[in-house]
Amino acid sequence: AVLVAGVVFAAAYSAPGGFHDNGQPILLERPLYSFFTVMDVAGLASSLTSVVIFLSILTSSLEYKDFGNTIPRNLSLGFTFLFFSVTTTMLTFTATILLLVHFEKKWTASLTYAAAFLPICIFALFQFPLYYQYFIAAVKGIFNFIRRNMPGNWEFLRIKGDF
Image 1 (cartoon, rainbow, N blue to C red):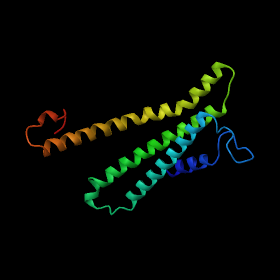
Image 2: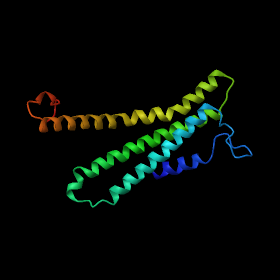
Image 3: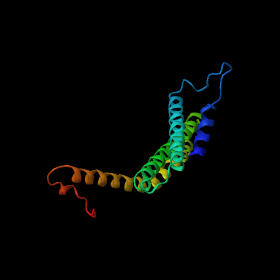
Image 4: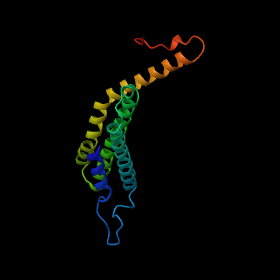
């Protein structure tokens, strides 16, 4: 998380294409530059948020009761922010590539764009099973909460394999 924060922080101060003599970015008028800026700020904010969450885990009291709720929740939240920061960092990289690379030949541009989007696709593919399991666990928890706390028969909310 700290590494991502450092990379995104460095990218925030180095505009793609460079700067004019007056200090304004050269590619400021291009719409993709706004996307670059928004993704860079989102990446910086989410990576620093994940750092703070991970530090809160390190500085927690580490009592037995914390291992049931607080630490797993904070760990899931920290990894979610880390996932989002890596994704936005990759999108920042992709926006930089798209801003700087201008090809005349269609096949060269297509290969470059595919190479720019490849890390995002691979990262999402590897992270999807984790978030799918996290989503299923959250839904089970909500249904169990409803079954326990609502009057009446709510057994139809029991998910197969839920004991």
